[in-house]
Image (cartoon, rainbow, N blue to C red):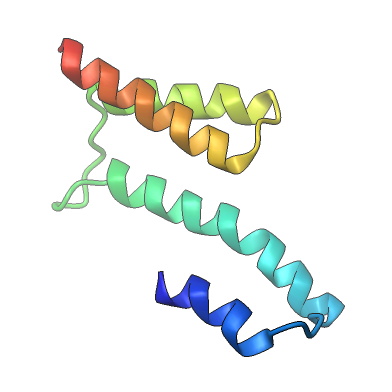
Amino acid sequence: MLFKAAGPVFLGRRALPPRALGLVEVLAPAMLAALVVTQLVGGDRELVLDGPRLLGVAVAGVALWLRAPLLAVIVVAGAAAGLARLVV
């Protein structure tokens, strides 16, 4: 949260250079991919695909295929996995 708050505080009303703006645009999807991978790979470096995780990844894939905004993808996938955990 501090990193997200630091950007507007330090930059103020200054515009980012085009190269830095391009980096910022690809940073969020890369961070999301890293979070997905760390959740899918267990502590012993093994793939952990239980039902709710697999459902969450599948729902996220469908949402991305439908070109949903990144925040909507995260919310829908998390809700699907959470509901699956409640049922199972």
